[in-house]
Image (cartoon, rainbow, N blue to C red; front, side, top):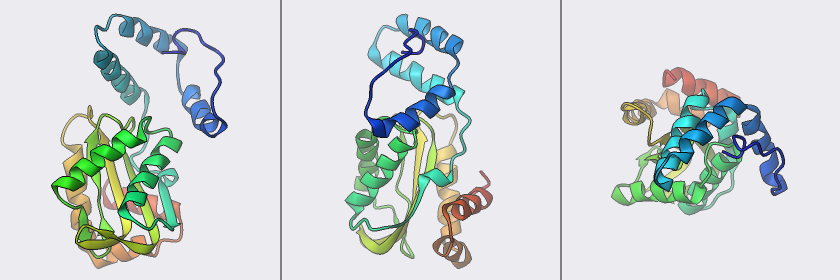
Length: 208
């Protein structure tokens, strides 16, 4: 909306500058002006939020899983640190504006049932309005952490935009849960040498 208003200068903290520059480079000023005109006709802030969410989804064709959303050998020591760290990473990657709200949605799912699957794997997941670009994130920990009645050392987090059409969320979750039952798939993930190797493996195995 600021681009649509013609703003060409903004002040912000230095950690946010690279991601913001990357996102601005993808915007078209004419499309932003059209978006601004539509937003001015909205009656409530919720209508504006929905309009912005739809615009971001239409503007982006970002892969579900990328090396930038994969972190290896983290020293997070608890489930709380894991979910906070992974949602913070989504903010840094420009895929989420409100990491604490997204984290709350993930905890709401955990309150229904723990997402630990055994084998030291967990799949926290949520379909949320607070994720701008649907994403599969990965964290491989140095040591296991308690996860419900299980322990988890390899976490694959699935966060899909609430406005995404269809049943993509459950299809990916079900496919991933089935693959984790296979030792060769688990071993390939655990022993992968790089973020790129994990991203490639997930794209192939989950048919993304």
